[in-house]
Length: 117
Image (cartoon, rainbow, N blue to C red):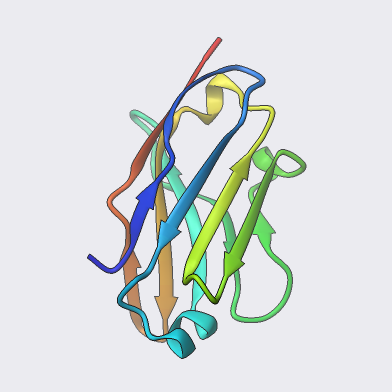
């Protein structure tokens, strides 16, 4: 497994969760250069981008999470995180971390986030 996601759970609306994704098998230079992100898939819906850190430039966020979610990348720990605040029931989904390295795309196993109203 290239990407190991964790941190999902059940939270009430308005609460917070922090997701983490480790890439233990990436060599440091590869992780540093990779585009890393989080996607989510709600029941009956297509997988959609939540946030990503491109190879250069500022992080990109879906409009629905701007101002509430923050993505970060720790190159030393080869980990990306997604801090999710002010959660809403519409944020309920399985969250997947993702990496793009040239033509190679990897997905984590997914972690379920459930937000109750």
